[in-house]
Length: 146
Image (cartoon, rainbow, N blue to C red; front, side, top):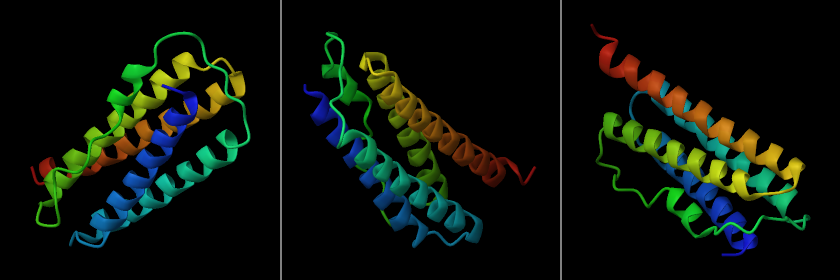
């Protein structure tokens, strides 16, 4: 697998995440959840822009490790729909963010350029921040009543 393909996959994952958060921000009834999902959509859109800016102009060097399994870390298509409840949407989103973190982490392990590694590190930390935000919201939603 070529680095260009991985970057295209990363871009598509960010686009899918953007569309996911945008779609469900318009469906959920809970105002706090709606606002959080809109914020996450904007952040995913920014990630797409970062990928475009830094990777379209660079000749990215990689080491010789096989990269085939990196794509395994990308989120799969949604198994939820507009009829899913907020709990299921949050759980799916949490899993999605963890997979994106793992994807960027694996990419970072194979990239030789330190500047690119820093960008990937930033993106993977963003995904972990998204996951933490979603987990905190989930905890408040589910366990906040006790």
